[in-house]
Image 1 (cartoon, helix red, strand yellow):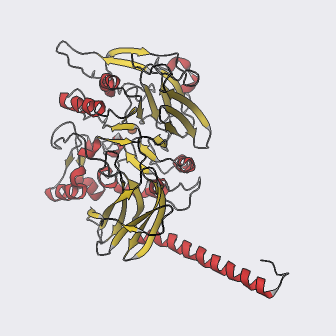
Image 2 (cartoon, helix red, strand yellow; image 1 turned 90 degrees about the horizontal axis):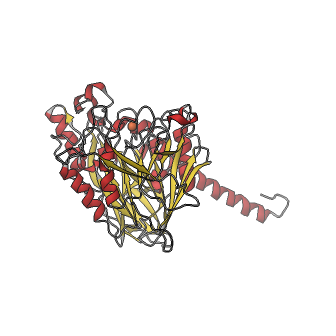
Image 3 (tube, rainbow, N blue to C red; image 1 turned 90 degrees about the vertical axis):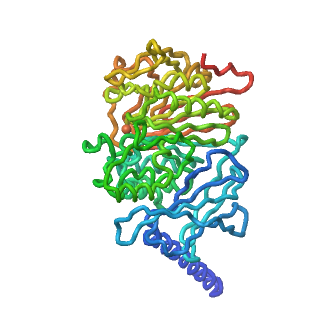
Length: 506
Ligand SMILES: [Fe+2]
């Protein structure tokens, strides 16, 4: 304000200040009020929409108490004035045990232009209670940016810094590579160590950032997400013990349901145990997501993604499961890029996890079907393998197996000439571990001893929290590993453009 001029101008400026102040107060009240309106603020999921479509679809999910209120989701393209109403949310019970039951709301926005920015808002009883901007899934001609990282939900300073850095990078979508919340993948752990950090409306290094409401997010099932770290639950997750909190992965995430439909009473799936009532409530609240959603696939732009459950109960020597993997990857004929994600890496040189090699059983299928990169977490560090080929040994009847110590016998062939900058043509699949998302780091001691690295290890960084950010434009992929302080700590590129050397796994 300038008080050295006439009264008219002073009054005009005072009025402007009052208007701005009123707007700021209203905004603060709106933000403060959100914690009363929502148990968990709205976040974006792909839902059961594995394939590109025109128009595009995305799901908005949130948690709230009671089911008597009238909820609605409206959306509009960035330049439009009019809001469009979407179908009413699907509602399921999350927590039976609360005095007022907590419900999961899932509304599909179904009229999005591929790759276009849009606004969406949530209305409660006709009043706007949440508004955000995001980008619809890209089509096969549009470039995109994604982030991959794992092992995050520990409520650590590193987790918050990583969240803030991811937000600064503005990804279109984010893959959470498992061990999403510690220690047991429980709903109350999501409330404490996940949602407050990734849905905050006050982004900062000290708090986190709203990455769940601004990017489409995908979850991968890790060992800490199924309570198997609990000694009492080695064979099954106890619903009597964990109640409504158990196996929150199947309640929080809404992903495509196109995986193999395994029987949850049988091996090769997560199992639950408990009283008849508890099992009934659990199955009602997870719907048809349990246990199917542990394995799924989806398309994004010109890439195909396959998400797998790498937990020990999965038998990846099982022929029907292997056939499903091969069929899924082989049928993605229009995808120029193929990526596979699971939590426990088949190639990790760290002492804790080196012998957990069972996912090497699928390397032959990945190679046959043209997979470019396999992403994993589990080890709380960053590892990049040389491009490699691996053929697991089969017995006389042609069956592969895992040794009693977890290792898998086989033949390894590496492309040690690829360095990802001048040479952008890897001869083999690159296996990345990006497990520095927030859980306690494994430390840098091993990094300094070159003798401890395995022959397949190209890069290894474990003295900082970090995440992977990738830019994919047609035939060109640029992969960067960024520290929680925003520093570039590794980078590699793959070029498949015409005139470039053939990208072959031979
Ligand atoms: Fe893990």
